[in-house]
Amino acid sequence: SQKIEQNSEALNIQEGKTATLTCNYTNYSPAYLQWYRQDPGRGPVFLLLIRENEKEKRKERLKVTFDTTLKQSLFHITASQPADSATYLCALDDSNSGYALNFGKGTSLLVTP
Amino acid sequence: SAVISQKPSRDICQRGTSLTIQCQVDSQVTMMFWYRQQPGQSLTLIATANQGSEATYESGFVIDKFPISRPNLTFSTLTVSNMSPEDSSIYLCSARGGADNSPLHFGNGTRLTVT
Image 1 (cartoon, rainbow over the protein chains, first blue to last red):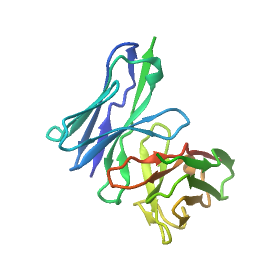
Image 2 (image 1 turned 30 degrees about the horizontal axis):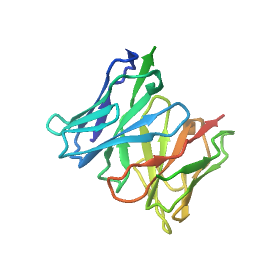
Image 3 (image 1 turned 90 degrees about the horizontal axis):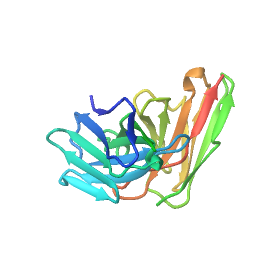
């Protein structure tokens, strides 16, 4: 069955450091992968999309890599700030459900001053 | 990007009753979906809301329990019927505007507690 796995343990880092979150998947052949941010009491918010033929994508302090051989994506936040504290979700297209997405459980990030 | 309004934002309901959740999008969208998110868990797709026809349900979800309407391109409802405490969860409406690689936009969810 299709699986998306993200670090289950919360990630605590100090302000100014780089946070790296991992997303591994099995039994997918995704054309693209997306990352979302979710704050408590809110719906997920789209951050970045990376296609299968792209190795890396950047947006301001965010960087995403996509290795289809390893079946893994890494999500980096450089110069992290307390405002970056949230849960980050990785998502892949669900080939069985039209245009819906399947989501990982998410990794909780806490950035402390 | 689409803005999605969902209501109610939360509710506490008694076992055996039903609750209808409304989802309004500020622009016409191609696809609308309903997800469920239980504490500490990932989002689980309930169904795709199809405009003008019956919703497409995922394995484990049935129309009698979760009837869905989508009368036009900007509005959908999800009803949680004959509720039990196991239905306590956050229900999220989402929409996708165009291409199949476009992002999903989400409402802020409905936090449902069944007593």
